[in-house]
Length: 165
Ligand SMILES: [Ca+2]
Ligand SMILES: [Ca+2]
Image (cartoon, rainbow, N blue to C red; front, top):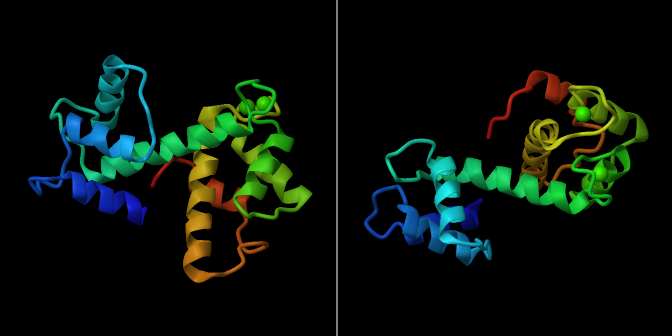
């Protein structure tokens, strides 16, 4: 997040606290995020700013970036390319994030996230779960505390069902 803020400020040449489409493209390319063509990037930028003022604020960038990261992880851990995360795939993802979770809590996290109860997480089901995990991971780094056994994902998700960053 710190790197993102630095990059934002560096690309905001006129100190307007917002980036236009050209500045944003340079910023994302500096994070090795590449785009197939100009059209793809224009659509992405329109999504990011959510309006037609043509300027992205830092908050808009953070929201977009977190969803982008969630999607990257989702694709990476979807081993069987089913477009959904099954419980073993979710387990791998937890492990990569340094979260050792008991089988029981894993099951609970899965059930809470799985809104349509089909036994796997679609990206829309995964995103709220990821935002909770992401916060837990960040807090863990900040406090150097073990979140094992302290964070009850299922309870956190119930308290925080909508995506917020
Ligand atoms: Ca899968
Ligand atoms: Ca599901």
